[in-house]
Image (tube, rainbow, N blue to C red):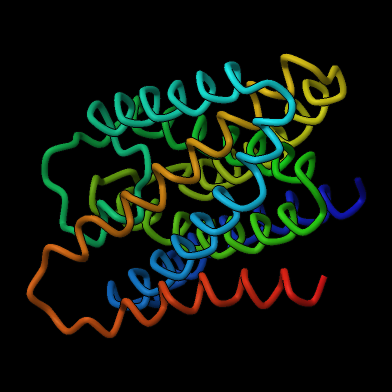
Length: 238
């Protein structure tokens, strides 16, 4: 349990640091953000199909399936309405979403769900939890950076650091809520684990699909392969 809290708070720190990095006048290329997203995609796909969903299936096949489907529906709907997963849309120069309180609320909710999914990953095993924790920390730094960019370009002058902090704190809050739910076991555990697996697949696909349709150098796929390989190597060591 201690490892879960360490990773949850490290994720919050990474999100805040990513935003602060930009607010202090520094920059990070879209190519680097994309490589981080692709590396995360490899980890999330591997851990979803080999660790989290099998554990959800053991807890309850039907509920695991409905949890995964529910995650897909919720995340897809949210991504159509606002900047739910901000990093890929920042990379793709997304011009279809409006910046405002709804966007900020959605990003904070996303952080809470990241924390719930992190707790669910640990319920599937320490190896899954550590792998997901590493992916979340990497992504949260990119999230914080991209959120700060959106706040700046939208003219959000006051309270930028406070907004970043609130968004970042969503992850440990979600981990706490997820831990409480998973302690009940049975149906709740099957649903949460299934939801986590579906979330991981959706987020990985949202990173990969835009990239593979572009006619740019495919070196980024190396980072996706490294993510898969890192999970496989981690499994071999345990």
